[in-house]
Length: 103
Image (cartoon, rainbow, N blue to C red):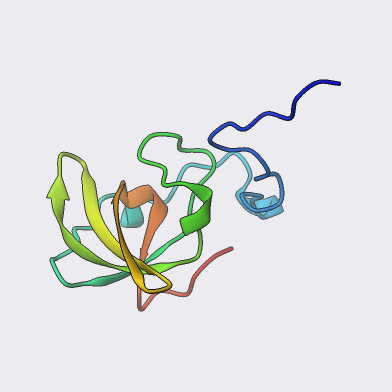
């Protein structure tokens, strides 16, 4: 028997699936060029067509707080149970809290 792969994106076929009308499209510029301020709350919604700056699949759908910026990515603090996790996420995979979350 062949051992099942344990890659970075394993078991994400349904999790990262796009809507039919969104397939192949790049994220809208209003999301990519948006500047987030420190303390702002964001939803982490992974865009499967952009591989750079993609957080691990466990954080898909979570809400975090922006702590700062590092290069093109943002430093986001997410609570997982009673633990704090620090992520480096590009804006293509983030949505501001006031915009409805697309999944």
